[in-house]
Length: 427
Image (cartoon, rainbow, N blue to C red; front, side):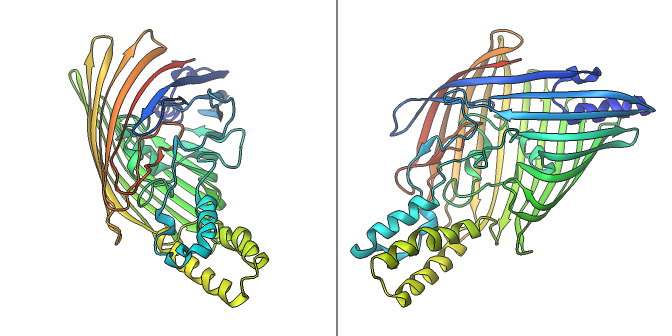
């Protein structure tokens, strides 16, 4: 019984089976291809189906049913050799400055442009330029579960990923329309949390679960005072099902991004069916301090240098703070249905997802995608995906990739589509 339990926990900790041995393994994924988005020229993109990476992982049997484990995984952008990608389609996002009509006068046109530039993420992922941004963890497997410490995937996001027919990659990924109201203004789920401790268990019956606690400066960007996550899963035979819940607390002690996800997949002959539901609420964005600093640190000094009276600057600051506080809030639910169908040496993939924006903006979005993944060998595949997003009202969602968010359409409410062709090699 104990031996089976340990083996199950190891399987939930790492994706590759090579870790059953007491050794250190170098592994990785090299993924790149071309992407053509509506209104944009074709471009080379790294990490379309899977984020390109290189990692080290290993175990040591220390006796008595205990094993030491570790995992270090670094992001690699094949197109540039860096570790911090930008948005795939870096058009200007407008939603965060919605309601700031006072800045639209001719005299303040340059100020509004400065605000939008400051709010637009020049670096979409790994702004800290961390070496092991994807995973940095050490742990101990015991006869009654595993305890791990470091930067890891969150329980809620693991359930989200298991329910995604496009496996969190390409323009078809469900997460392409969950990034806050109107486009990539914030994460729709805490993917990882740093400065965290996690307990995991997997039983021979297929039932499993995880609990995660993050200390100060935890969360994906280290902006939380506290982070909590939990999941219950069932993984056995043809079933991979789960329910997960994440909750962050900002550095002021206020409840921040809170998500609940239910979903998974089931195999039926040549078919694999996917379904998921994701609820997200964030009344106190952990990014608010960064947003406030755009005005006080970048815009206000320029206004003072231009001779604008202090009282006018203070009034503009209040208008900015009131609107950015409201615009950074998220209240939405989404769902996705998808499938794989084994066809030849590959699989046909398809999905449909819907984001129901519950804010006053009502910027709903619908995503549909189809693709084919062809296995050249056991480790190498080529793929092609066609995706389409229908935006409403302030929506500016556009298809992205596994390693980089899509970004924004040129005009709010404009539909977007993309075609991607790439190659992926696992080693």
